[in-house]
Length: 379
Image 1: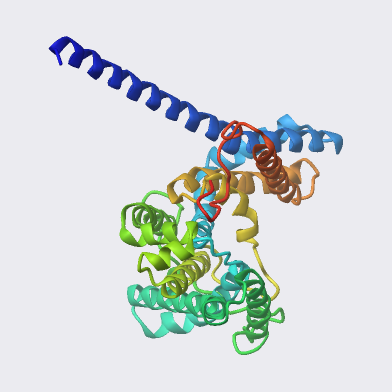
Image 2 (image 1 turned 90 degrees about the vertical axis):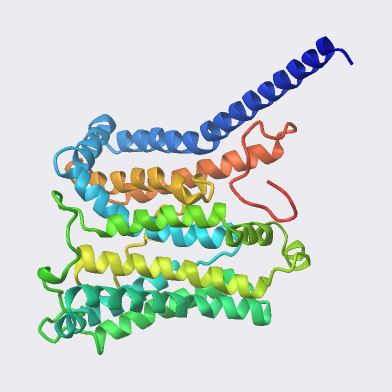
């Protein structure tokens, strides 16, 4: 073969590789546009039409959302709201990447919040501040692990579907949290069923120069660590293999039952840590029948992020902005705060429509890749 022919073949191979790279980048851009941006834009437009139909000015409403959520002190309130949302999102991502549907997030959060808020004053009274914070975080992690073990063991020991068991566990733990707050954890100094209020001096410290507590830093560090573990380690690879095919994972020597339990426990621990950060950083107490519903609110954004911890950060931040500024903006516009829940529902509706259209199109990839990691090698 002559040097001229070799050079020509080399140029041809490089051109093919370049075209393949361009095609891949174009496919990813289309995927992000159709599957991530479009649902949010659709939900914003539909929400604006709904607000207009109720007699309010949608442009003024959304301007207030941005102004109250970003300008002045608003960005600090938005970052504070992000801390528990990010940790709950991380807990969901860890479980969902393994095709394990841990739906006990509401009960895990509420129970951990009740216990941490209830015992924090006593722990702070007997231990140095730094050690007390570590003990309370450890307690939250233990609560999250204990709750998650129930559906995990029922699945691995008896093959019971985790959707059913985790929902049942959530109902039980929410009821248990209410009983604790109305009973042994109730503040005897007040008539309403709530825990004692933690003194401000024992709350999580602020990031220097801001009014944002360090829980935000804790959440972001956990996100970065999770991204590395899930994408760059053998543990993350085992999760991906098990998610695609449990049979293939067994054939490869992966202990599927042990991995399932580990994933459930990690998921529950992150959600319970969110409760601890929220109680020690923002609220300082918990009330009976209180449930912020963080998991339900950020669930669509977890899938919009394609179960990527880092990709979830801007999406969760967007919802935190909407929730922070939207609460006051809704009051000023004479609207119900439920308009935010409607927005989340509209995002889910658009995601469902895109998913349905993508599966019915004869040309795969025209509507991007599925939000779900289907088993058996599907996308």
